Image 1 (spheres, helix red, strand yellow):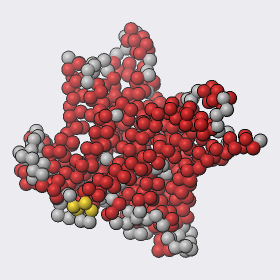
Image 2 (spheres, one colour; image 1 turned 180 degrees about the vertical axis):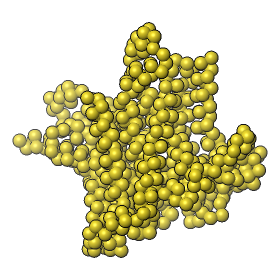
Image 3 (cartoon, chains in turn yellow, brown; image 1 turned 120 degrees about the horizontal axis):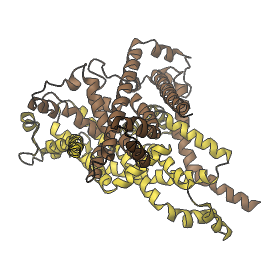
Image 4 (cartoon, one colour; image 1 turned 90 degrees about the horizontal axis):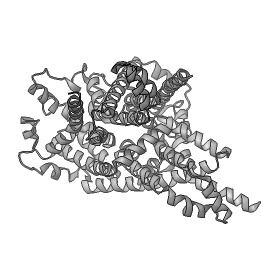
Length: 272
Length: 292
């Protein structure tokens, strides 16, 4: 009996959490008038693609461009984040007593405590001063820095067995060789975890992209969606269609890598 | 000596890009933000801005709308932290219980999927779910014979509507943290308590809850930081309305920024930063003291 109750509650909550996805998907294939008539229909009457057609071009921005921007900005900022943070965390954990590294670590941690949303305002001013406003470079560089990436790498490098590195040193290997031949092969799983989590986070990032962009040329999917949702004369079906396009790539990535993502995000939070 | 020096210097080379990014996109903007908060907005972006002392802070702190917004933010954060952690803990205990055997992962995935869903997309869908004419929420309530939910259209329910949408987006994360903690709890203690005749409540209160202390502390700090700066959901769903009912501090600060009132915006950012820092430090210190 208790078992039935437990399953009933768990199922009910799960269905409630998944329902918005179903509603979004179904509504993207139904005309606005059909949704108005019956908002709860579980399947579309027919697959009406006009919502998707309507978002192929929104104002100056084409869907293809927004999608390409999302892929490019998320991809490059993820690669950069992994590279830069891994090297930084590696150096800091290998030389923990260096005063410069201690200052760097402390400075970074304080920075990460500054509310992200509020950091974007002064970052806008910095990017303005650097002359990077309106380009991709400013967006990508800003998205390449995050606390969870640092915590995950730091945690991993701390658990590296010292003997392995010592043995390589005695064999006459330089630090660069040690990094590439000894450490990197061991670090593959953590690199994959950090890369996937960063991709998920950066795909969703909208505020820095919006603030650093000066035209819609550099907008990503979430920014395009926000803009469409804010337009007068609501294109409801188009909004649902664009939500689907924005959500599906990361939802798919998450489902493929779910174990890694959940474990990584837990660890990143617990160690931080 | 030169060989050793070269060996050391390579680490500085490794750390250089990381240090560069941390300075340019972390330390510099924060310092700049503090500087801008002491300058006149119109001159903030000039090479030589005009310093106005505490004028921006006086403007901000002297505005009753700021205090109204601060009060709303604190009330909302308190409610949201309690609701999210309560819900997440209940779900974690349920999924961890011996009654759930098959399908645990599926339930976990259902609750965690919103965490990695782009927040703009998730909140856009919620904005329309709440809609008075399109929305599934009121249609479902009508179907069940329940009264209508004002949602984001009414000042009385807007905060609740925002809270539910945020719970949907965040609770799965807190749940997974609780689950990780539950996984390392001592089963032997529970068995011993059960042999001693403890009932379910006593078991939870005196055996499970004390062991969950680490997860409770982490989740409280994370949730506090999260909900004190609630922002995206406001931009997407309510725009601070209706009638200012959800005009939380971060959105209020953003409006200043949007009007190019950089001085006031950064002054408010500094106030919010200090607030977030103070609240999370207090929780941290209180939890450390509680442990001793």
